[in-house]
Amino acid sequence: MSEEYRLYARNQFGKHLAALRKEAGITQEELAGRAGVDPTYISALERGIRAPGFNMITDLAKGLNISHSQLQSTIANWETYSKNHKK
Image (cartoon, rainbow, N blue to C red; front, side, top):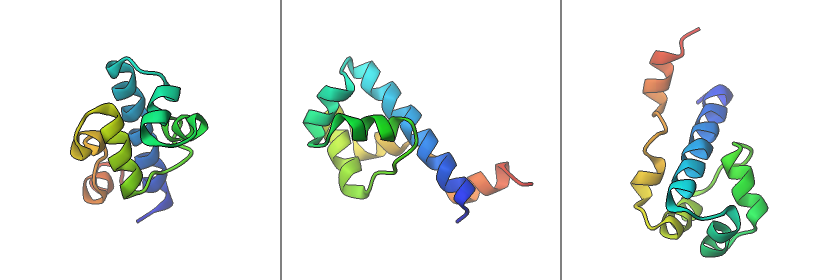
């Protein structure tokens, strides 16, 4: 998997997380409290600077009252990304 895809996936996840959080009507601070992390971590996720692990995705989904798969739904898999982003 390329570094380019990793950056793409982090950015897509972050945008989706921010949209879901705003849709839920909660702040980064509130989501951070629900997920048991610092608000700066939520900010870094939403800006695509950090990438969450499986357990954190689960905690974020619980904090948003959505399923794990709903949180990850916008990230294209590697095969799809590769086909759509050929150089």
